[in-house]
Length: 358
Image (cartoon, rainbow, N blue to C red; front, side):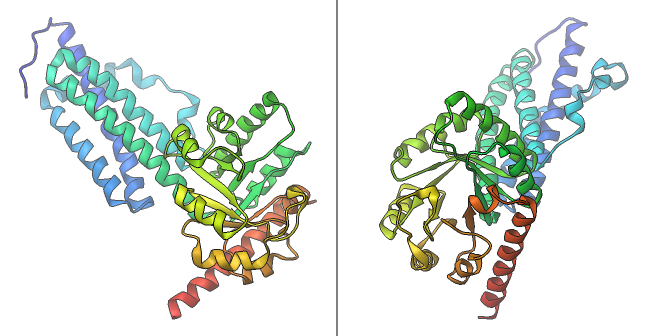
């Protein structure tokens, strides 16, 4: 360990206490994140990175710094904030602790320059590693949620937009896309922000149709692009790899192009004719059967799917479906959502059992 710079009797203990408190804070936050990487994601690489960061911090956490700790006299122990007492979902737990680590590392970097020059530079590099860890973790978490999602609600303009979406979320919906082609931008931005907060409160993914600017402004989990929208490669440059990008496809050529471009998921349809895609010929169940054997990313059958024809779609091989009117115009959105989710779960369980037997 480099020699400590000489300090006054007053400054030196305060400096040590600052370093001790923030080393504790950073290590504790990393441990919270590490537990999720280990037990939640079963990701050895991310778990090892968290563990390595904790061990590197421990090398700076000397007995000298620990001895300066004075918890009873610390005025900060009595300070709290209402948001600290509640976490709506696991994503908030992870984000809160990653922010905690990043803030602590910044403090350590600045005060570490006074304590030992090597400490400041080392902690600066570590902070960048935590930023990278955060990006990987958010991307991993979103992709994990995407793989688990079976029902996808694409909204349509409605005076009861938020009530219907929340009712569906209560029914087990895991993925929502905000789609409104007619409202002005101010209204769409307000709606997107409110829907994003609503979805994240229920632990669901939130996607914005077409508009990358609105997706970023609303802190959405990604964007969905149609065939006439901007190139997927450009969307990736703007959104980064931590957010999801979906692409609509209506035939095998469009599917393979979307896969080559790096879409995280695709829409497959329209299975049936639908007013949402007026004038668009139905791709039919045959395209569903094609997707079963050729799609290499999560895909959602979409287009005119409702409770009456759901089993036709499932029998054709679909494991995930996207709906609009079936939920947006339902008298009881929660019950309809629960029905879709139960049928999709049952179909997945049957397929899993058959695969295990073969």
